Image (cartoon, rainbow, N blue to C red; front, side, top):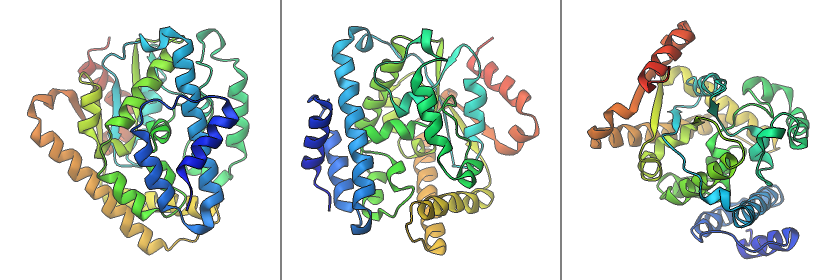
Length: 320
């Protein structure tokens, strides 16, 4: 079992910083530390330590630069849906509009100090992040588009609040996942808001484009944090999605040297994402006043004619 207090103390010692932000992060951290398997203590401990250090740096920057806390995040666009339902390519296409802003992989890999527009193409953190990506197995990079300059998922941000399925992607953490799927995600979305402010302060665009399949579980917290959010909701036959998704998760387990029972993993993934979709659809049914905030996109239509579907999305968003 990992010791949350020891990890916090180590992160503070190594960074020379002390402000962790709001204390709600500690519940997720404690759940994560309690759920770790004995053979994975070193790897998960290092992942947690890295996120604690990023969190400390985020709030140190927030104190140093008053411009950050004054940022307003207005009407962000979120891509939400099952994994492997076109969310990644849709996110990338929407983010390619020069008027749009998305968190890039290099920015979330090393967010401190705040990225600057004038060094958006030359910041040395870009090359460092790309080097790290290229160290990953080619099979994994072929399964999931990756690049330092590509938009990253909100899951990466939520790790700093210790409420993220990313922790469980390469390992079995059933107790943590069970807790997470029913947890209040408001603290994670507040951290998410702070990160967008951080990224926007010195590199602004007209609107944000964001993405994470696990937002299916937390539309309540999403709208509580971003009352003017717009949601593009992707749909694809689960029978086409789940084998691909389970294969990706199984590969992540094996890549980290963790044993995996593919049959059990497939069943767990199906149950998890069924719960996510049920939660999201229940939220939508309970909030008819938000009907016009959702654009439902069928995967088959998107793959058939991506440009036509993007044009429909822009018309819905009233973006010329």
